[in-house]
Amino acid sequence: MLKRSIVTVTALCLMVPMVGVTGCGPTQKVKRTLALNELSREARTAAENGDDEQSLELWREYVDRRPHSHFAQYNLGMTEARLGLYTQAIGHLNTAHDLRPGEIKYIEGLADTYIQAGRAQDMIDLMNETAGEGGRVAGQLRLAKYAQQAGMLDEAKQAIRMAMSFGGTETVEPYLAMADLARQAGDEQLEERALRQALWFDPASDELDQRFLALGITPGPSLAIVPGTAMD
Image (cartoon, rainbow, N blue to C red; front, side, top):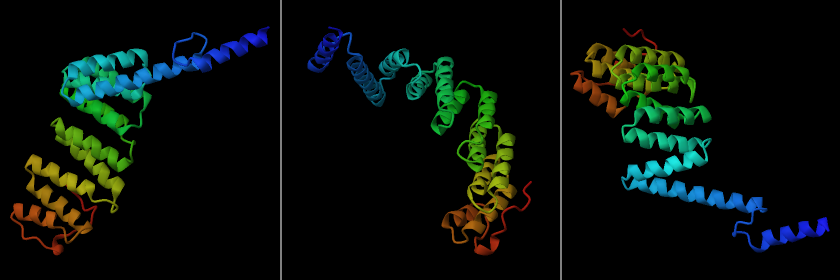
């Protein structure tokens, strides 16, 4: 009799997969997943259409139902940030980062929101804590980028110097970053020195030639100096 009952319930599950039979656990799971997929789709569409209020409500519902979804926490946080709800946004973006600590997009979204909220020191702390993500050079340049955005030029310069140290003669990016920082700070001497080291990587760079011309310097490959030259 027990065996026959099991067979009967199984048959019901196979015959009516979408009518919500309480004994059909897999069926209920499929229904729930499809509903969440639709919720996500509608939330993204609302955001694309500029309706952040609607997107907010949809992402809130998603997170209520699936709080351990890192991408839902991230999207909810970014929507709140666009609406100026910075405290709530930081909470959800931190949760997304905790759930997926190596996701660079989540780190940068949180950093952007810290800056918007006027919490520059929290941003610096985050950048230092995550400086190893994506490689040491990339991590230091990321720190420098956000420090620069926050007007923290000394911290940015220090981070770029660390990137130079880690990168050595392998990548031009730290030297271009230093040149950009120097230009922002109005330090033409430092900008010239950084550009000359960048030129070592690509002596025929038209872009660097234009940068030298903007400084009133006649460009040419002879300007190049070996990366690692002391920079004040």
